[in-house]
Image (cartoon, protein in one colour):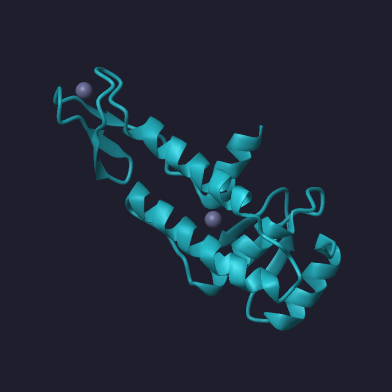
Amino acid sequence: MPSTISLIKKLRSDYPQFIFKKSNGFSWSHSENTIFYTEKDDNNSLLMHELSHALLGHTSYNRDIQLIAMEREAWDHTIKLALKYDIIISDDMVQSNLDTYRDWLHKRSTCPKCTANGLQTGKNTFKCLACGHSWRVNDAKTCALRRYNVKT
Ligand SMILES: [Zn+2]
Ligand SMILES: [Zn+2]
């Protein structure tokens, strides 16, 4: 596998339409047209993943379920894209990554009063159909922030 530093060099020339910027984590910002990466964590799978979000034109989402769909789509794309750069994306990695989103979704949608599964009524609001309780959750996480929470 190429190192992140040499890979970034190659990606910069292959994808001049995007800005690649060193940061303390991997993420894609549609508004800044920038892929953020870190050299500390040589994780080319995540770099390929963020590039896939960029190439797919992913922006924001209104429902958690859309985020999961976007993540799945991005990983499908990542697997194909990574082949061009001799990077192997393991299925385990993809599944465990998607699992973190499923767990997160599950936690947010669980009714704090009766633990039934609630219905998402807004970007950060849920309603329980079992007991009628409504609740708010914190701002929806971005792809990278989400992973950072899981890692720490
Ligand atoms: Zn409830
Ligand atoms: Zn993602």
